[in-house]
Image 1 (cartoon, one colour):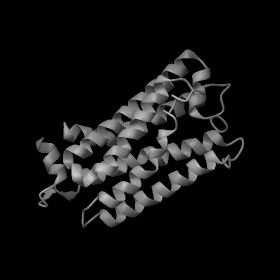
Image 2 (image 1 turned 90 degrees about the vertical axis):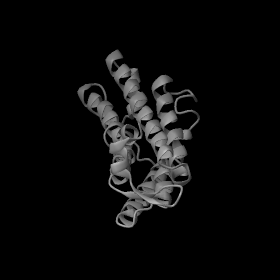
Image 3 (image 1 turned 180 degrees about the vertical axis):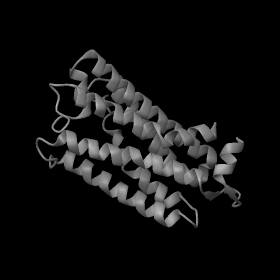
Length: 205
């Protein structure tokens, strides 16, 4: 189960979010540059259903990733895991509830997407890769923070909200691919303090 929970996140979160991007390109009255992905819900029923399913699939995948981190070691990845689970739940709510209501995104708890990479940078411990992965994760956290700040204060360039959201989505959801891959190839400490090859442990589980 741990193997599946981590390994699936190398592909599913990002792939699921690419689907509505492709759907948007196929709609003649929809602008992928100026309109956000949630606005696909206002178009053809097929686009609405596809967008909702993509959000639910991506969110569920991220929740599974968080649960997989807890199975690796609660004390090692607790903050990353909880942030990922909260963000995943907010994505699921995006698929269940319509755009415009407070339950779409569960009152903005999707902001936890910002801290998940930062927590991972602090909690990931592998002498061969931790510096590189940590630096990359922190850079993605800063980028996510900047994007969310721009949206809150309405600095997101007018007429380009769809484009900036898609760039953010590729970076933010792509981080789960990076983190999962790093975990599968790394050595981390068990709660006892003894190092373990995580990838080998997953294949054996």
